[in-house]
Image 1 (spheres, rainbow, N blue to C red):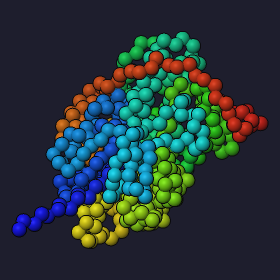
Image 2: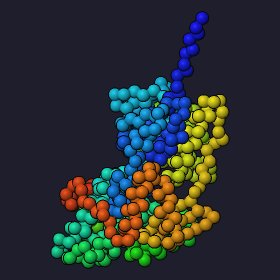
Image 3: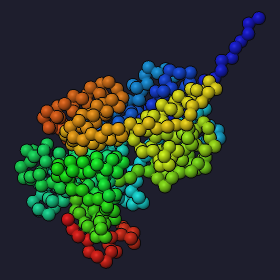
Image 4: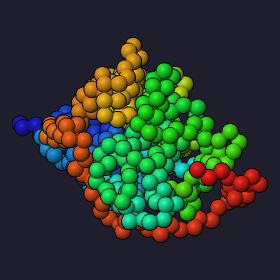
Length: 453
């Protein structure tokens, strides 16, 4: 007699988001005995730490992107779907992507974070942030259009506004953007124009706290500030932006209102969890913090659902030192690898200790030959830190051909001090500014007249 053995159905893992968290979770599960479905609204993984170099013309979008299908082409248990998940049914264990319903046994949500304007969403039009390729291209358009418009402007007051760049936020993104724009103005573009002197450009960095790069050691923060100032960047700390309207940034510093006229205002001041975090909270009653990040358990699951993980920038993991882990690539990478390993062990009847992040350090690029690196046991500044920054970023790029292209681009830029990707694409050079209706606590209601810079 022949006995028919029914094959046990495979475990279905659905990963939403192809950023660092989702990517490394999928890589940890590649070619294992589970079925993996990776869903992203983009068909590529984006190396966000280098977006600022796209925005300032050093690299092209393709240089820092890797097609997801290419990354997983040899992982036969991994399926990549292009689409946007707009709902989750945790009871039925399904995710909804438009008209398509996808079942799961284990769900990993890694959809990252968006910009936060602290309740002033009407500022978004006038001060774009930097999270996507489209954001970087829009920033690039605004930055290089400003120089082009200044070249044609005969009114010195208006020209000054075109040559004034204001960056809101003194974290790594704001610092790196400020340094890159300063190098553009004072070095790269110096011989390119005939009617303007690009060395007259003003680059202002506004930081709410008492120092830039607050996540690193104070002495490195001070070194970074000194390096930026040497490049020509003006740093305003202990400031609070109160209004952005009609090409004017108003901020309060030491009780005094200050106005800056600028045609190019860039936002790097805050983030909030993606909308899927809010949807997940509504469907599961899990708590979110003030920034919309999902509160997770020590093993990165959510309360009441052992088969739902939230990782990366969307997760608030506060079990290590009482504070949420920073929204940086190494955190998402380690969480993705942890969850991938935990899922495999669970299927074998085992588990892992709670997640523990190994801090690999913090670093920021200031300019050519200038960077700061804080590894805890050693702190670097200047050229050595700059070399270390280059090596680390090359290491984290996903595909070999991407690494090679970026190395060649950086080497050529270093030799020539030129930036080949200075393309103005998209909208017309400058869109006429619109008036914003301000709330009652707008600076226009202040009795004291703002100081104009």
